[in-house]
View 1 (cartoon, rainbow, N blue to C red):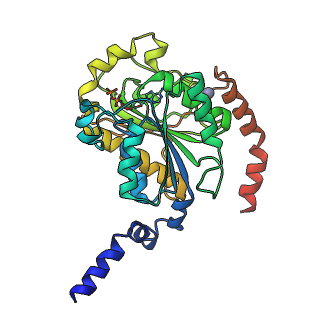
View 2: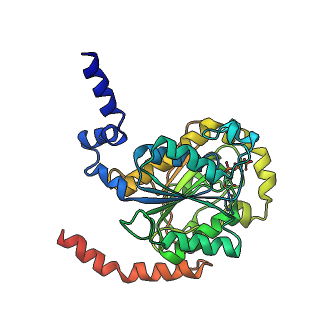
View 3: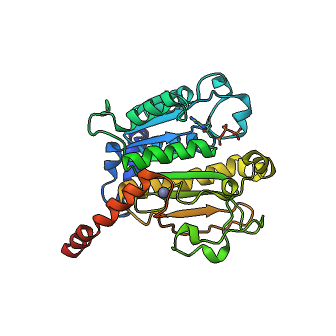
Length: 319
Ligand code: ATP
Ligand code: ZN
């Protein structure tokens, strides 16, 4: 009987048989399709590294990892990286750990700055390239886990140009929305914003961005930029609660949960989900694109989306 128990364990340690449980529960129709999907993660820091590990353990087909930084001892108050990896690029250290966890995942390491001309070129090319994971070209989803405005604008630019759906995660959220505005689906421009702190402040949020269909990152610049407040000043004030490995783990979990729902087509993908770690408050809202967006690629995608409306309505009717 001992031998039987052992073999049962071996079967259970297969990541796919473990995850097939989801399918048996009837939540996901075709769980094994996860192996066909490619996900790009920009920023392998507190949130991105954990998201990468979750997707690896879920059996994702291919992960493209981007970061310009190396692992430091100061990162040990986060999850994922280990002290012996100090000095390695974050992307190489991630590939090392992830390939050990699940050797079936195709892992691509891009140690570069996406905001430089050369970095952006490589970034854009890699998002559309035919992969060694020969099933398809391009990626199915982009996850932005960077920690600054400039890098977010670049991810936004790339995804608008490619018409690529992406999800964004933000830690230490200083973009305060008036509670009244939260449920509103009017233009983001119409949303009332407030400078008052704490009450509505959230520790982080995730957001779904579908070019042309939802607000892009440039449709409504965050308050910190709009009001000319220095990002770094704000960062120092709110750094404690948001930088905890717990908060980052929660945000990474929310991000990957929604990525899985999007890829495997189950449940409801949250257009925006905030997390206030002090009050355990999770605000949600929807943001429509701004026709006057400063990003020309966004305006172009909006036009295409409007033009495709009759065809989509007909397809929905035929169902
Ligand atoms: P902290 O900023 O709190 O000191 P951190 O640098 O690890 O920590 P995180 O918020 O944990 O920041 O992760 C963000 C990640 O995004 C970092 O690893 C950072 O190197 C990466 N990143 C930011 N901007 C770019 C960029 N332009 N190109 C590539 N990677 C970037
Ligand atoms: Zn826009």
